[in-house]
Amino acid sequence: MTDPEFAPRYPVVTGADFTTASFGQTPSQTVGPYVHIGLLWPDGEDVVPPGTDGAVTVTFTVIDGSRTPMSDAMIETWQADADGRFDHPDDPRGAVAPRTEGFRGFGRTFADETGTMSITTIKPGPLPAENNAVEAPHIDVGIFARGMLERVVTRVYFPDESEANAVDPVLSALPEHKRARLVARSVDGGYHLDIVLQNTDPDGDETPFFEL
Image (cartoon, rainbow, N blue to C red; front, side, top):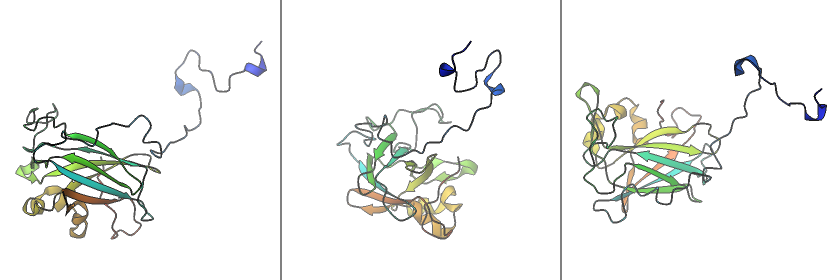
């Protein structure tokens, strides 16, 4: 006889798979405020080594729906090298080692108390797109923060690439008033982009995000 004190608290499945037992919904967990646990990367913000020729700093400020900067946010970036190539087998043109020594294409950075974070990188080159189009130089950005069950993904474009931006197929797919929200502004030593996570007004200043 089973001692009631030690009776199993959950259904026991024997001789069948887990689908034969009924379980409640697993509690969900938002991304934050625990992004610092297990995700810290001491030099994650250095997409290129310090002192690299042509390096620029790109800063981001993450802002929530109440227009408050988020100090418990994390950003990951992914980009091509200065030639618009990836040292990755998924590049349909083939993986190519970058000319910039130490360039790794991926970055991870955490917000400070003002909701701002930065990466040091090089400007990527343009990328080929469908129908012989060309994507303007850009960096893909994934945002993780409190209250979010999944990351959101956007891009940052560069203000000194106006001709390329004008024909970029992704920017061109957006309403004109939303395109500027993906274009960084020039600051000392590099570029800055504000990322606004939420706005109930469809014509408000929320950053455009991409469905993956």
